[in-house]
Image (cartoon, rainbow, N blue to C red; front, side, top):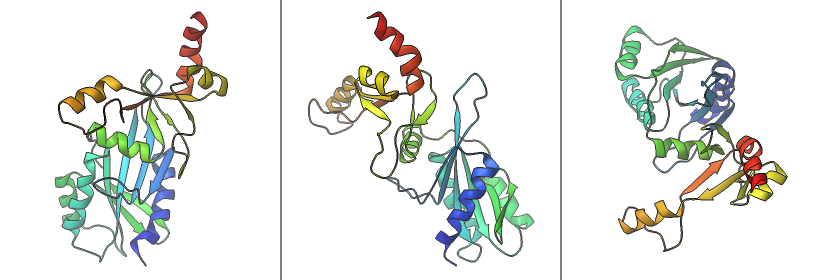
Length: 224
């Protein structure tokens, strides 16, 4: 069995176990390609906070345990929690659990058609820009007003299909979110050599969710 054959099984387990509202497999990023990724709500009634989870999937005989554990740990630059999932006849032994605990990763045992969380992952604060890129790969964006995460489009070719481009009127009419661009930040980065872009061009995209468009911007727009 190839490791990629295990991805759908782990993804389905992740949806149910962690109650993820968005999941993906084999997500291509600039510096890596996580096997299984999920996002879940953890903010309660007063916050739109979410938590991202990445699971590195291995066959138990594919490489040394410490090597696979280190690969899983590297994903903490992207996600809040990181796990190593291995398909093996027996669960992790005491030494392996100690290694995982020392490194700070969670462990998932893939046995037959099922999965079991053997060790929970600690919570990490990922690099913000890498975490936002990960979420965007799952067609999720952060609202600049309420801070919630919402669906910005549909894959594979309609990543921003649930948004309008800087058009509040159209967003209100179609009950969509809004995407706009921060040109001042783009100009500053270009002047300082942080990002090479043509003058007047920006990739500094920002999002406003449909709820904020409907409940906030529509009223302000009406007053105007």
